[in-house]
Length: 147
Image (cartoon, rainbow, N blue to C red; front, side, top):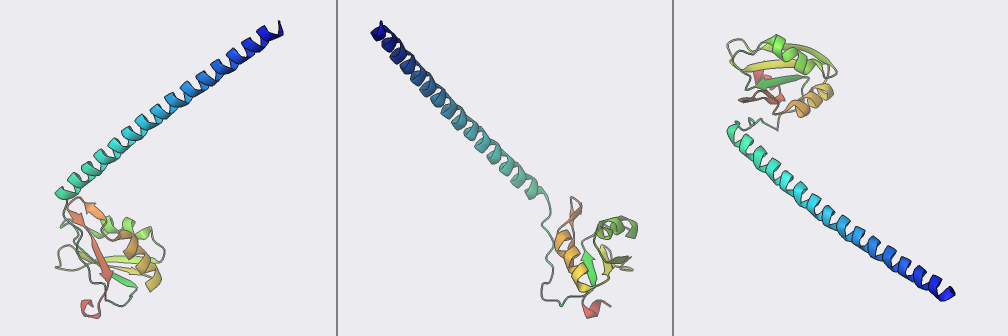
C-alpha cells in the first residue's frame, strides 16, 4: 500500500506542476496581449494628438532676453478678449495685482504682479495657454519701450 500512496502523491505533484505551468503560460500570453493592446492605444493617442496639433496655430514666439519685470506683456489674445476674461486666469497666481488691455492694440495686455518672482512663475506656467483654439498666448516680461 505505501507504494500506491507514493504513486498517488507523485501523480498529484505532477498534476499540480502541470497546472501551475499552464496557468503561468496563460498569464504570460494575457500579459503579452495586454501590452500589445496598450501599445496600440498609445500609438493611436499619439497619432490623434499629432493630427489635432496640425490643425492648431503654433504657439507665438516671445523674446527670451528681456530682464525680469513685475509686469508681463501678453500677446495673441482673441480680439474680443476683455480684462474680465483675463483676470481669473492670472488671479490664480500669487502677487497678482491687475490686468490692463493695451489701448488700440488688438490682442495685447499688460498684467502686473507684486514682484518679478510672481510674474515669472505666471509667465512660465501660462506660456502658450490657449484662450481659444486659435489663440495660444505669448507672454514675456515688459520691456521699457512698452511703457
